[in-house]
Image (cartoon, rainbow, N blue to C red; front, top):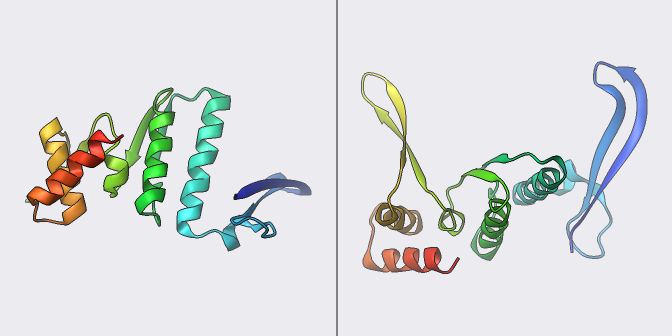
Length: 162
């Protein structure tokens, strides 16, 4: 039952333009709208950005959307809902999503692992995972460093219950 309002007002001309734009949000039914910056938690800000990007994509025709930890501050069923929304957007646009949540990563069509390898220099290595490696990575995200049969089974359930 959250709602967002956008308020436009004219201001004195400056390098920032002649308009002031305020985002006002009510995060719970019956609550008054207030400044997004003051009311929204990190997780709520992430979800507002996801919805705004979704709407802008639908209206602008942009075909590549990048979400950098759009799921910050959420977990469990809310994380899964964010993942499902990203999956829905990906039917019409290319979506690149950086996440640390198995509920989101398990819904991906392609899964890339990003690692920093340190030798004489630190180098970032990006590698696409096979289906089996994806299961292990989701299991690691669920259980930590030690992958168990139970975490693998949970990973498979997350991936197949999309």
